[in-house]
Each structure stands twice: as structure tokens, then as C-alpha cells.
Length: 326
Length: 274
Image (cartoon, rainbow over all chains, first blue to last red; front, side, top):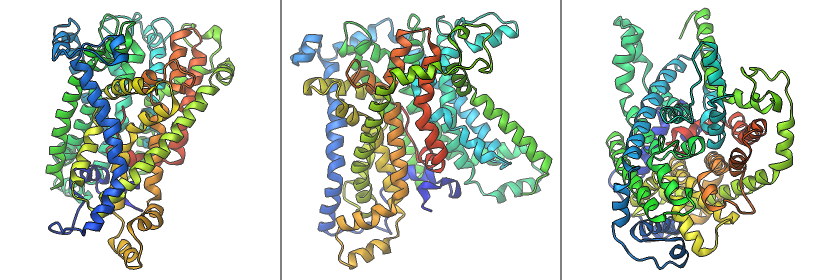
């Protein structure tokens, strides 16, 4: 069995493989120059993907940048003769009354989701690491929320949180708490989308942290047990410190993915009511596609701010991974 | 590890309870999909589908089949495109060691971090000019951007593990790089092909962002838009909405049952989900 298909049997194979994407493929000792013919062959194999990246990543991104620097209207969008306005769209976005709430919501959404996803994922990973009967099957079932199409999860949560007929309010009623307008009250909308997103993110954290746990040698636990460490101490003194590299990767990836969460929020609340669950991702979409009169320029500007944020954290991720693979 | 039998069963019980809590929304989706129209607004709602009805599923059969067909075509198209692009790239990066390979790796990694809506907006601008809006091939290309960087990652990792002697032997026997790739590397990499295909299919099947921006209102819309229109148009028939959701979840369920180890491998390999 090759490593990729069977991570549980190998030392955190997955996370290591993530490292393989950044570090050059492991070569024996100092780099040997390959003959020119091999170089040609290599780039012949890489040509399709390079062309693809240029056409379908670089060009749309360039168009997006271009959109954000011009004053587009629906007419000039089709004809392509919008006047160049420099950073005017960005200035408009910064001065927009939605900017501050969107920034705050993005920060809160990302931070709260990350903390809970990680904490719950880690607790579950430690629990499932104990190898009891059915543990493998149950662990597999935990993947379900992660595999479901986001529209399915989002609409299910919408109905569960429905003010009049939702199961959540029915359960609250049973223990004597009045109905909460989960999706339609400005003070609860953000909480609701955060809850749904945590539910979706837990499996990813569980699986990655679980594979990290398997890389910790059992002998360390045995030694700690001989030294009289109880379960709590074993966790804080052995598991948690040794899991730090995997935790860093998990949290950074989580950060990058949570920053760009769009579907869940859009389907559940459309960023509302009254912008109370608007993040940069939904705001950008709202500007570009959500109104009758699309504001492509400002929408692209908001999107580009998000790209910059994602790339900054992406660079941090690459650095962390490099350091770990050394 | 020797533990007493009773403790193991205790843990199993806790595990079952935890899994039950985690999967409650999934159960609720099933339950609502079987609920009769007149019970939909009942308070408190029935916890079990006692008066179960298949009316919701009948509606799915009547109204949603075209959407499901479109999703299937788009999913399969995305799989073919993704594997065709990423398998040769993985082979080159893993075994041929091109100069500039490191940079390409970095670009692929960065590509995965770009938010989907930004890509969608860029694609919208490009497709508007090319007249590719509301076209199935256009959506296939857009959906493949979700999976290609991941595919290259998986193929590179997998093919790095192929013993060098094997490739050396092929070269000694006179096989060129193309022959080596097609007759030796690709057959050995069957597992990687399966993993990449599964995820490419799942992501394009689940895609909502690209579908919502690029083919919204067109003649061929995928199932994600089918559900979305449902939610928008008729707020009352939640059994039909949830029945559609259940049907839309079937690929995920089938994949989990048949190919769980590939899924776990994909997640740990730094999987991306928008």
C-alpha cells in the first residue's frame, strides 16, 4: 500500500505530504543536473497544467484586478471600455458603512469557528485514538458533515433553526425557553452561521489531528504512565506539545478556508438581516451579483482584499511547513 | 493494549452517543423529507417519521431529474479534465525533477488559497466576453479549478513513492518518458487516480458558487441550484426540499461507504473545501 492511500499506518503521512508540495521532491543529496532531454520531457508533461493555470487562474485573477481598478457599469462591463479610476473603488469600499461590520464579522466568524473546530476536533481525536470497538466505523461516520454538499448542510440547518417550526426552538420550548429568531434576528444570525460552520469543520480537524496522534510513539505514553502521570498530565505534557506541528498546520489551513466561507452564510442568511452576518466573502458577492444594479468594481475590490489576506496567511503556512519538513 | 472489556464497551457507548449528536442534522434531514405536508408546521415536530410519506421523493422524481443529470455530466467531465491535467504534472514533478518545479508547486499551493467567489467573479467577466455563460463545458472548466491543484499534490506525493529502480528498468528497456508514464506509472497509481477522481467529482457535484454565478438561469443547471431555487420559490414544501437534499447527498454517502480509506487519505493530504 502506498502512503497516500493509507495515512493511518504511517507517521502523519498526510501532513508530511502537504510538505512535499512546497519542498522540492526529495533528491538524493545535492541536486544532480538532469540531462536536457529529460528537462524537455518534464516540461512537456507540465505544459498542459501550466497553460491551464495561466488561462483559468491567472487570467480570471487579472480580470478581477482590472475590474477593481475601473469604473464598471453593466454597459461597459459588456463592451469593456470602462474608464480607469485607480484606487477609487477601494476608497469607496473603505468608506462604506458596511466595511467595519464586515471586517468585525469576518474576524469573529473566523476566530470563533477556528477555536471551536480545533478544540472539538482535538477532543474527539484523542477520544477515538483509544481504539475501542467500532471506533473506526464511528470515526468514518464523523466525516459525513464534511462530505455533504454545502447547500444540503446549509438548508438543513436553516430548517432546524426556523423560528416557528424548527426543531431547535421546539427543544428550547420543551425546557421552558422562549423561541429565538435564529436566522431573522440581527443579534443571533452570526451565531447561527458560526454554529453551522463549526459543525462542518469538525471532521477535517478530527481526521488531521487523529493522523497526527498516530505519529506519537506509544512508548512515550508508557514511559509517562510509569512515571505516574495521570491521563490529564499525559495529554498536556506529551500529546499536546508533540502535536504542535500538526496543530499549526491544521489551524493555518482552517484559517485560510474559514476566511473564504461563503456558501453557508449566503444560503442561510444572505449576510442579513441588516448586514448582521455579512463577511467580506458575502459582501463581495452581494456587491457583484446580489443586487439588481451590480457594482462589479467595488465587489472585485472587496474580493481582492480577501485574496491578499488569504495569501498572507498562505505564506505563513508555507513557512511553517518548510520549517517542519527540515 | 489490554483493557477491561467493560471499559471498552463504555467507550463504545459514548462514541455512539457522540456520533448520534454529530449526525443529528443528517437524521433530521431524512425525517423532514418523509414528513407529510400537514405535519410540517406541527409543534412540537414529530421526532420519528410515524406518518411517513414518500410525496417529497415523488416531487424530486418529477422535478429534479434534469438537475441531477446535469450534475452527473458536470461531475464526470470535471473528473476527466482534472485527472488528464494533474496526472502528467504529478509524474513530471515527482520523477523527472524539472527546473522550476518548485515554483510551480508554490503556484499550485497559492492557487488553492484563492477564495471561490473571487474566481467566480473573474470567470464571470471572462465568460461574458467569450459567450460561455450558462454553458456546461464552461462550468466544467470552472469546477475543475477546485480540484486540479489538489490533484497535482496527490499525484506528486504518490508517484514520489514509486521505486526508482522500476523507472530505471523501464528506461533501460528502451521506454521513453511517455511510455513509462502510460504503461508503468499510471497503472501503479490507480489508488491516486481513484482518490483524485472521487474528490473532483464530489467537489463539482457540491459546487454552488460557480453554478450560482456562471449558469444561473440557464437551460442546464446542477442540483445545487435546483435546491437553491426550491428554497427561494416555495418556502412551504420542506419535505420536497429535504428529499432533494437527501438525493443530492447520495454520492457522498456512496463514496463514504465504498471508498472510506480514499476519503481519509484525501482529507489528510491537505484537502481543500470551499
